[in-house]
Length: 77
Image (cartoon, rainbow, N blue to C red):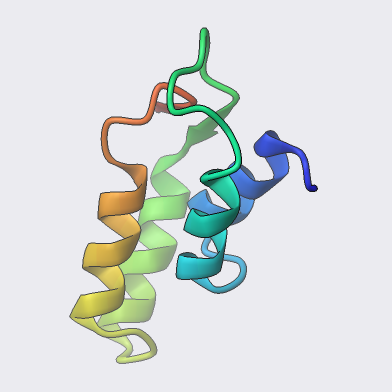
């Protein structure tokens, strides 16, 4: 099993299949005492850029955003 921090980093930076990353995170409890990773403006800019270049679709964007939303283990810059 991979470390939670590595899975979160991959999720934040959109490295890998989002649904697979979500499933991997399911191995860990939802609650976390402190954030393990921080999503930076550059991470969001990268994903929005891919969307604007038609490399990803709106369904991907929604899945990615939903996966990040309200997580105790992700902080926002």
